[in-house]
Image (cartoon, rainbow, N blue to C red; front, side):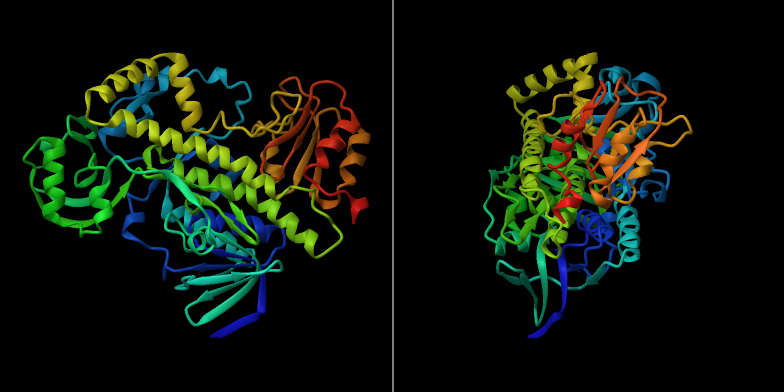
Length: 515
C-alpha cells in the first residue's frame, strides 16, 4: 500500500459535494490544511442538469453564502418555464409547498418575523446544484484545499492522535476525518455509527423521458387516488408510488416499460413513453446517526441524516451542518497545535445543536409522506392542511419552517434574539453586517461605539472583530455578539455589562490570556 503519511492533513473530508466543499472552505479559511477525497471522477452528472439539478436554498443557506461572499458568484437563479412556477402571479403565486399543497405568497405574513429587516437577503432562491458545486470548488481551490477526484475511501483506522484513510492501494493521514459522503456513507459504516429511523412509505422516481402524448399529463404536482406525479417540463417527471419502497429496495433496473407502467397507474392515463433517457429512484426512508462524532471522525450532511427530498430540505440541512462545524473544528485544531485553548465543549456543541435540527427535518419529511398516502385518512389530513395553509398564520408557520426563518439554537440567552441568525443590520453608510463576516471571524457589534467594548473585543485576539456604528434599524439593541456562523450568542438592549459579554464570549472564543 502506498503511504502518504508525509503529507498529513489537519482534516480529510470524504465527499466533494456542496456540503463537503463548503466545510472545506470554512476550514481552509481558518488556515487548516484540508484533503478532499471524492469517488466520482468529475463534477458532471446527468442528474445535476436542469431541471433535476435545481435546488431550493432556504434563508439560512442564502445567508451563509452571502456572509462568505459566495452568493454574488451564483448566476441569477433560474426558475423552470412551466405553469407550475409561473402561471399565477401576485398573491396567488406559489412560493413553495408542503406535501404538494401549494404555499401561496399572499398568505404569508412576514411581519411576524420581527428580526427580518428590509436589508435581509432573500428567504429562498432556486439554484443549480452543478453551479453551486462549481462556485464552491473554485473557492476551495483558491484557499489551498487539495481536491482529489476518483478516490473512494474503502477503510480507515483511527487513534487518539489521528486517522489513516485507505483508498484502495493508497493511504492518507489526517488529524480528523469528516464523512460528507452521502446517504450510503462509507465513513459512517466503517466508523460504526448507529443509524436509526423509519422505513419508507414509497418509491420515488425522477426520470427524463420522451412522451408521445405529453398533453395527457397535467402540469405541476398532481395527487391521485394511487400516488403523486409531477411534470415540471414535458418529459421531466417525478413520481411517488406508495409501495413501501419495495422497488427501490429491489435493486432492479429502471426500464422504460417499468416507468411507463408506474406512470400510467399513478396518473390514471394511457400516456406512452417512447424513450427513457435517464431515471433514478429514491425513498422517504428517514434515518439519523445517534451521534455525529466518534473519536476523530465526524459526520455531516446526508452521511448524518437521510430523508425524502420533499421540499428540498436536505441540501439546506447539510450546508447548515458545515457552517456550524467548520469554525468549531478549526478552533479545536488550533488548540491542538498551540496554547490557544478552545473553549471546553465547543466541538461537542456541533452535535448538541445540529442533531435536534436534523430530527425536526426528518419529522417534517415524515409528516409530508403521511398526508400524501392514497388512503381516506391521509386525504382527510391533507384537506385540513390545505385549509390551514390558506390562513395567514398557517402559511406563515409553514413558510418559516420551509425557509429556515424560524430555525434557532437553544443557547439559553436572556434576549429572545440569542440563538437566531443575526439580522442583516444596515449601517448609515450602506454597509451591512453580513459583509463584515467574510473572513469567518466572530463579531462584536456595538451600536453605541463604546471604547470599553472595543478593548474587550481585542482580548480575543483575531477571533473576534469589533464593528461599531449606528444602523438604520437597530431593533432596540445596543450591542450584539455574533458567532462565526452568523448566530447570535448574546444581545442587549441596555448599556451592556462587560462581565455578561465576557461570559458569553468565553463559551465560543479563546482569550489572549489563555495563549
